[in-house]
Amino acid sequence: MLPPLITKQLVTILGEERLLLRSEDLQYYGLDRTTIWQANPCAVVLPGSIKEVQQIVLLAKEHNLAIVPSGGRTGLSGGAVAKDGEIVIALDRLNKIREFNPLDRTVTVGAGMITENLQNFAVEQGLFYPVDFASTGSSQIGGNIATNAGGINVIRYGMTRQWVAGLTVVTGAGDILELNRGLMKNNTGYDFRHLFIGSEGTLGLICEATIQLTRAPEETAVMVLGINDFPTVLDVLQTFTSKIDLTAFEFFSQLALDKVVAHQGHAVPFETKTPFYALLEFETKGDEVLELAMSLFEHCVEQGWVLDGVVSQSLSQASALWKLREDISETLWEFQPYKNDISVRVSRMPDFLDEVNKLVEQRYPDFEIVWYGHIGDGNLHLNILRPVHLSNDDFVAQCGAVSNEVGQLVAKYEGSVSAEHGVGLLKKDYLHYSRSASEISLMRAVKAVFDPNGILNPGKLISAKQD
Ligand code: 2HG
Ligand code: ZN
Image (tube, rainbow, N blue to C red; front, top):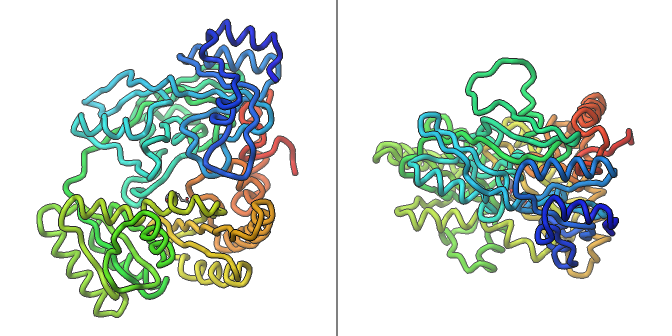
């Protein structure tokens, strides 16, 4: 329950309509896409300016009230879950474009801007915002930055971090910081902008961002290839990347394809069933690259690596092929999957995958395991589906135990327990498999500088005290 004094002060800052206290609003704003925790915030606030965000943070700081920053809540690690009576600050209303500069090719937008609206704006200017993933229709740019979102174009364009030229944040101390101001060159000491990118709302609230745009890609083609075993997926990757700058190299298993086809009604890419599929995308630049891609495809067939394949002949066929990959995550929701989002260097993938495979086969003998991911980036999504006979609690406990063993393997291969989904609540206990004790204690020290009262997203990413 929000104390009456705080309610009164929040109403003074925001007016009554932008302070939400009804149970359905608390439920709606208190959760992300995870299904493990219950929403239980004490209030939701919808500030309309950076100044208002600052006033709310200062009020929370004065009264030691915890805050959960909230964007589109499409996260998969519980980073935006408010389960302990926190105030949710939803940035939805900070969704405007403040400035576009065609010479710099930058656009300054409010954190609440929907990612797809930013992509569309770039297209209207003849430009391109390259960060792309299935939830762009509801995720917000502030949340993308707070989690350093990746997606399907990372092999060519990098993660969100690469496109952030400036940030305006309100720290947990209540300071407004303007970081880097859109500069391309700025060697004036510590670049705090990069601390906030991927900080999951634990240091400050991202309120506005200056985003770098780039030239739009030329026409692209999509290929889907059927492949016999996992190490071969990487032979195919090497064959193509040695000759063509791919914009994507994704993979999924036969089980992933079966689920998507059964649940979404999509057509299979070809009749041959193969254990794995790779999806490649590249700019065609006339017919030249396409011819090269076809000759590489033939080489892969001759080697016995690729058993069947298809290349898109039109934009609509390209987007139909993409749906086979992009709809996997959405398709799996009804199975309440336990999600692993792990990465190693691409060169270590074959050995790593072999060990992960043995581990999960042994530890999850009766569970369905769906393999897919951004394999060109060394990023594997392993979704474990909940068998109907098992309660959610038992399922999560079993998967949590196996995650420790997956974490040990990740550590052995010097990889990451969270490649692109962030740590939030879900991966916190496994953080030590990827980050050293010294790093984690430095993270705590950094948090204490920007959020001295520990009010920002407490319990996410790192716990307040040494475990
Ligand atoms: C994807 O690559 C997303 O489709 C979601 O990152 C992955 O749901 C998942 O595990
Ligand atoms: Zn992904």
